[in-house]
Length: 402
Image (cartoon, rainbow, N blue to C red):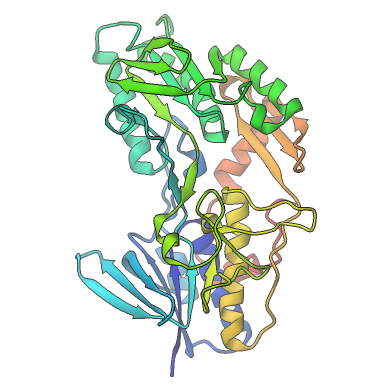
């Protein structure tokens, strides 16, 4: 009887889980005995780390050829219900029909979504770059500003959130606005961060570099503050300051996909399941959690994965391998990813590259930008649709950042 692995999600973790699972099945000579199905709305990977950019080309590459090359079936739909006790799923397919899928192993790789604070006006008037559709909506809005009468509100963008996405969105925005409104336009870009200093979350040394870069880019900081209200023409801060702005971009962090709530077990503050060393969901037999759905130790020093593609690509490989390994009798592989880097795009200033959990600054400006461009155009994209080439880089101990 054919055994079944279902992978929910086709992001970085889901894609690499599929490739790694098929690699393990092939290694064990069990092809034809185990079926791997990926469930997602379309067979695409959204290149989410790049959605802050002005040019939204090739941001959702089609992976159907890669899946076909390795023998993974794609089911267009969304997992709506998980019954981990009976190992069944309810999927709504692309035609709106409800299907039931049985599984022997489930890899939950449904990612995360924007965390929206309960602030009046965010839902109605805010923009974000959390999905390709939302990034395209922001781009269309910005392009349309050129046809509007020049006012302080038209010329102002407020970015809410001082994490990686907020910093990159803010640093990119002055160039973006000038390209749309003209080099002589009196533009204004403001970043709002609840931290005592903008960029403080990156550490002391990187924070100094970030603040210098933002100043050179022309971005105004509002640190130690939060947004209390938004309307179509303004933002109000907790300090009482009201900033005239037609464009507010929310980048205040993400939470695990709500589907994770259907898996029993311990969770962290972002809604992620606390996984074991092999990425099992400890309270749900047959379920592996990966990517942004899991919190897992990256080393023996107390560090854990962040909700980044850097970690998702490794987590996916490990979860996919282990899901298949349990069915074919191969050894399980513990997740380990001790090397951690950050490469932060800071617009016209360049980019900041750090290594280690203490974020030691190694490269800045043009040198950092060169690394960022290589990451954004090569490292994070799926390889070509060649079975052997895919399997060659799908091993669970593959080092994402050399």
